[in-house]
Length: 219
Image (cartoon, rainbow, N blue to C red):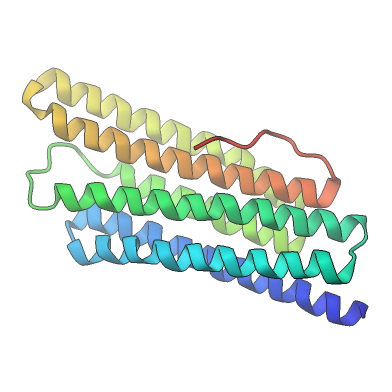
C-alpha cells in the first residue's frame, strides 16, 4: 500500500513540474508579445490559460484521491495540503499571464513610448521563482524555498523601476497617459506573479516544517 502511495506522490511531483513548465511558457509568450509585438505569442499565452486550469483540476483530483483513499500520516498530509494550495497560486499566475497578453494585444501596432528592457527582466525573475519553488517542493529543499521568498525583493525593485519610468513618461508627454497606464498594469501583473511565486515557496516551507511563514495574497 505504501509503495503505491509513494508512486502517486511521485506522480504528483511530475504533474506540478508539468504545470510549472506551462506557466513558464505562458509568461515567456506574454513577454515576447509585449517586446516583439507578436500577436501569435499573445494568443498562445491566452490559450495556455485553459491548459493550466485543466492541470489544476487534474492535480486537485489526484490530491483528493490521496487524501480519501490512502489516509496519509501527518507529514504526507502537509505535503498534499501544500500542493493543493500551490496549484491555486499557479492557476492565478496563468490568469495573470493571460491578462498581460490581453494588454499586449491592445499595444501591438502602436508606437512604443517606454523602454521595455525591465519587462523581460521581471519575466525572467518571476519564471525563476516559480521554477525554484516547485523544485524546492519536489526536493524538499528548505534553503531553496527561502531563497525564492527573498528573491521577491528583486521583482519589487524592478516594478519600482517601471513605475518610475512611467511617471517620467507622463511628466514629459501628457498625451501618453493611456499607454502609461497599460505599462504600469503590466508591471503590476508581473509583481503579482512574484507574490504568488512567494506563496508557493511559503507553502513549501509549510510542507517541510508544518509552519506557514506568510499569509496568502488576495486577488
